[in-house]
Image 1: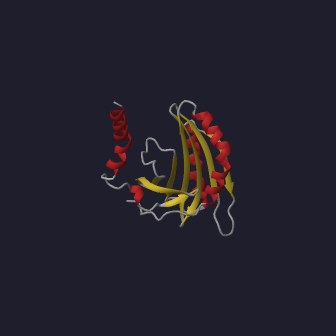
Image 2: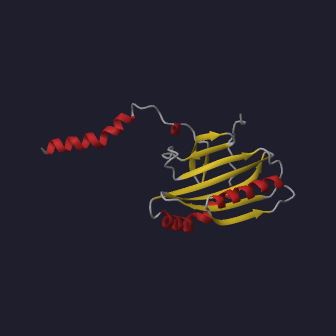
Length: 188
C-alpha cells in the first residue's frame, strides 16, 4: 500500500515535468523585448498603438501581476499636445474611480520637451492595481510608458498599501529614468 501511495505521489508531481518536455516551446524561450527594474518583459498583446508586456510566468492577461504598457499618441507632435493626452489620461483614471496618488511634471528644457507623471490606484472587487504612467516625446511622437502592478484577493488594498510603501518611490524613479523603448512596428 505504501508503495502504491509513493508511486501515485511521484506520478502526480513528476508528470508535469515530463509532459512539459513534449509541449511546444513558450514565447518566453525567445529573447525579452526589454527589461524594466531588472526584470525581462515579453510582448503579449498589441492593439493599434498600444503594446502590452509582462514578465515570465505572467502570460495570462487575466491574471498578470506586473505589466508594462507602451502607448503612442501619434497626433502629439509637441509638448503641448502631449500634456493634453496626459491630462486626458488623468481624467480617464478619475472617471474609472481611480485614486490619484500623484501627478508631476518635469519642465521642458532647451534640449528636451516636458514630461508628465500620473500615478493612480484602482480598487476592484477581485484586485487592486496601481499604475505609474510616464508621458514623454519619443522620436517626435507622444508616448506613454505605464508600469502597472496588481495584487489579487479580498485584502488586496492592504497589500497594495504595503507594496507602495516599499516599492513606490523606486518604481517611480526607475520609470522616469527608463530609456529602453523597444523598436515597434508602425500602426496599421
